[in-house]
Image (cartoon, each protein chain N blue to C red):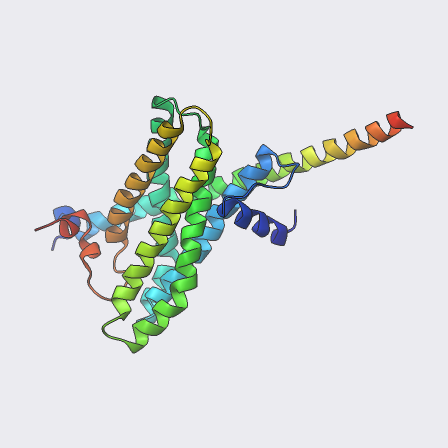
Length: 207
Length: 60
């Protein structure tokens, strides 16, 4: 497969389409791995833009942000698979992981497309720079969650265990967010200003 | 000086280092999985070509 066609297939999967036959399990595995690797590159782009206040922060973000995304996904995935098994959902663990990977790709694609805007506002506006950087993360998270839910809903449409599959999706999303919160705190500073997220759960949920 | 969860900066640096090591290991595993899947895919493609050729021979 050519890299361009692989990317096109990845986009097809991300928007909820079906691969052209003959599609195989190996091909799906390749595309899932490609989705994760592409996500890391896209997250790195956002990291560079968000940390552009200083060269050192920008360079550090180039590896810190992708690592935060990867570690959050790794932390959440086992719980999602266990939830899938315990609820007897009709979805295979491989399919859950594949949908999760493509939805992360979709989310980081949003992050990367907003990265230039984050960068320019960060340097030209004292009021909108940080809120825009944080806002872009929330938009990306919402996009990824919606893509994930839609991908799984389509795969189990009409089959048994539909609700159980969506329950596993909810578990995965919640655990991903919980892990993300602490990994962001551990990797902080990511944005050149102090935000509630620098202190993790303790500062976000403190009164 | 304490940071997240009342832990010292050294402790948090060590936690980040361990987490980063897991991340790098996961990346390496992903590369291995990709290469194995690519090899499997090539095999499937070759089998498909052979099947098509065999079918054409039978039809003649």
